[in-house]
Image (cartoon, rainbow, N blue to C red; front, side, top):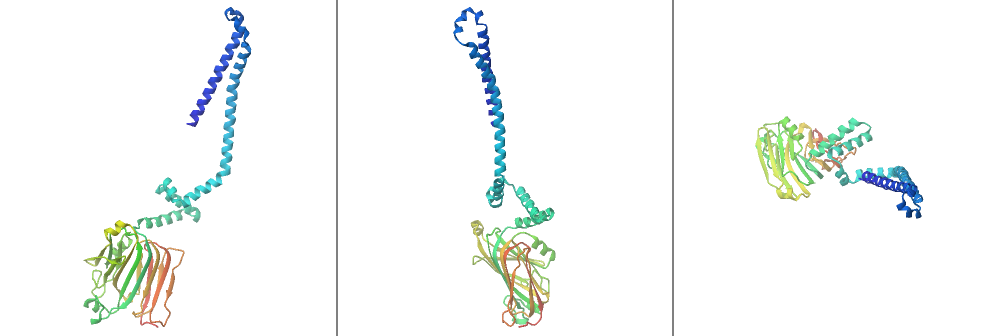
Length: 376
C-alpha cells in the first residue's frame, strides 16, 4: 500500500510539472507570435514571455527537484532505519529471548507444538554441544511426560514387613493355604498417599504371575498398578492371599473396591467418582494393599507410575528376620535422595528415602535385604 501511494504521488507531481511546463511553453510561443495576431494585440501589455519562461522552467525543474528529493529522502530513511536497527538490535534480541523464555502465553500464540519441540531441541543441542544426544534425550522425556495422564505431588509410601506365621497363628485375612506355605514368606503391607487432580475415573491394581503381562502393564501409561508374584506353595497371582487391596480413599472417604480374577492374575478396581473427576481439583489419594513376598527373594521393587514431585519411601522391618537392608533409588536426576536408617540397638528398624524433585515414570526404589536373624 505504501509503494502504491508513493507511485501515485510521483505520477501526480510529474503530471503537474508537465502541465506547468507546457503552459509556459504555450505562453512563450504566444509572446513570440503576438505581432502576427492583430486581434490579440492588447495582450502585449502583459509580460507573456517572462511568465511563460518562469512556468516552463518551474515545470521542468519541479520534476527534477522532486525526483532528487525523493531519492535523497529514501536514502536518508534507509540510513536511519539501519542506524535504529544497529543500535536497538541487542535490545530487540533480548526482548525476543525474554519473551520466549518467560512468557508462555505469547509463545503459545505464535508457535505450534512442532515448532516448540524444535526450539527446545535446538536450545538443548547448543547447551550440550551434541545435537543427536539432545534430540534423543528431549524426545524421550517429552514422550514420558505427554503420555502420563496425571501429576502426583508429595507422595508418601510406607512399607512394613512382618512374618507369615504357620498354623493358626496366621494374620487376619490369611487362609490355611497361605499358612501352609508360610515358611520363608513375609507379609508386606504397603500404603501410598499422594495429591493429584484425577483424570481416570477408575484406579486398577493387578497382581499377576505372568511376567509378560507384568511387563506390558508396567509399560502402560495409565491408572493401573502392577505387582508381580512368583508362584510359591500353591499360591499364584490369582490368590487373594498373595495380594489384596484392603483400602482405597479419596480425601479420607472410602471408595468401593471390586475384585475380578482369572488364571494367574487378579484385578482390583476402585472407582474415583464422577463428581471428583468433574470438579477437576486436587485431592488426596490414599490406598493400602497387602502382598506376600518371599524372604529369600531378597528384594521389593516399588515403581512410580506417574510423574511425581516429592517422594518419601520408608521400609519398616522391625518384625522380620532380616539382618540388613539396603535401599537403591533409581531417579533420573542429578539430585540424590536423602537416605536415613535407624541406628543399631533400637527396637524399631527402618530405612527411609526422601526426594524433593521430579520422579519420572518407571523410576522408583528397590529394597534389598539379607535373610537371617535380626541384629540389634
